[in-house]
Length: 148
Image (cartoon, rainbow, N blue to C red; front, top):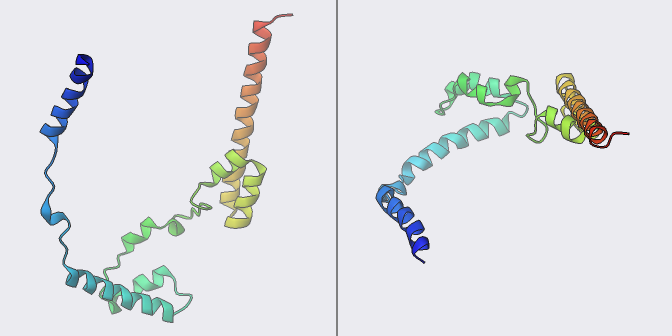
């Protein structure tokens, strides 16, 4: 029992001494400010819905018509501009590496991008290489442990 208490007491003292007090203003918010910001986004949404087929670059170019702060640097956050379209948010290499030929087919038909398909193929090749190394290592281990 003494060991248990000696084990728990330092954790309790550490928690009490380094614990932070909850700040009361964390959950305070200005609802008028939030409504104003959402009204700006509503204007942008109406513009996008009224102009079907509009791209993000066109919206940024015409952003002066809105009060929304759209910056060209925000485009860096989108995978569309990076040219990398992961299928279901999973990189193409992993599709090929984990699922093999099935993963290559999924990437090929979903992404329709030669670079993504190539990454999936390299993932499948990596899977084959790892498998070959494991098989070779198991044979080496088996024949070294039990010689003829």
